[in-house]
Length: 307
Image 1 (cartoon, rainbow, N blue to C red):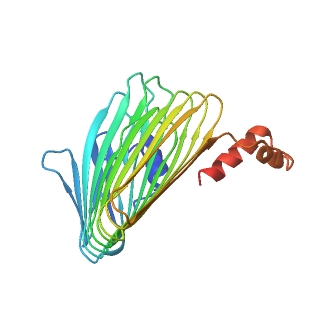
Image 2 (image 1 turned 180 degrees about the vertical axis):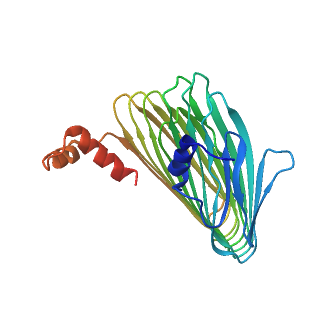
């Protein structure tokens, strides 16, 4: 399928791609397959019922990439996609996902994507998911991602979840189960503006000895937008868990942070940190003495905060 210029721009925004990538990929545009490539070690197979794809990575695969971006440029299109990742033992892969919606019409456009990960022993996965919205239409841009993670012994997963611009409403739900020695690192970066709303829920269970999780959410709520961040870790063994929620409020923005720690073992060590507040006046003053306007100083602080 030939993609138009709007779809190519969306691909660049959510996957940092300006050309066909090296390695395995699956491009989806307006609910249709727009391109696919497999490698000797990575196979991508369409589900028989047409609801999504299965990605299978052979054991021992090293330093290969998988790109699976989704773009929507049709107003009124709504879809639900289920993608399953099977990562073999000792594999090491980089996965780039994400969805971009450009809506110039009057009807809402929506993508709901459910990703399930089954990560083998001692495997390592770096996963980046970006969401982006654009278009001047009255219709909303809606994104509701779900992530389900099952980590075997000694596996490692690094996740970067980014939503900075243009999404009217998002409900993100992520769950994870970690066996002994598994390690999960999650970094979320989120900004809302206008009347946008964003709900982020992370629920992690540390099942085995030596399992650990580190979840850090940084967000900015501008204008009349609303955010709810729900970070929860349950420790059932000798384990370590840390959650951190840092939010900046501007204008009439609102943020609700809901920490939840549950220890079911005397050897579980769980920590939570949270901070919500406005940009400090001295930070603005310092940058303005360097010649920046107040608006430019604010943008500089926000960009640094969300990096």
